[in-house]
Image 1 (cartoon, rainbow, N blue to C red):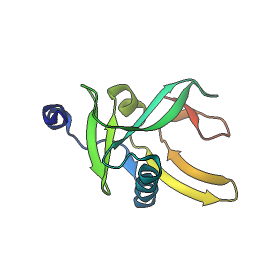
Image 2: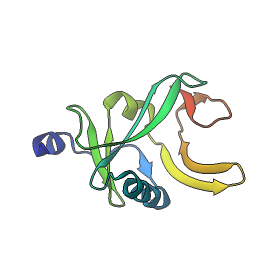
Image 3: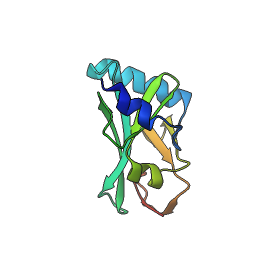
Length: 121
């Protein structure tokens, strides 16, 4: 791993991963054979409301990624996504409406009922 990239871009991200969500990420890493990787958090075009939330595993950060670690989970976030997700809390829920990761994004100006996309800004 190129530690110069990590050190250059290490910062406290504006995304908060709850302890429960971090636990679920670690379990998913084991199931996917991705132990030792980071969680890439971001948004991409698409979804019902313009931007769709993205969670994926990544071995190394991209050149401009913000790098953070919370509850033993390393996070990589690209600058565009960091702006759209500023102040977002990522939690894990297991209730009557479903099980999965929940994004509580204070930047949402419009969203649909699926909870997987937003119009941020």
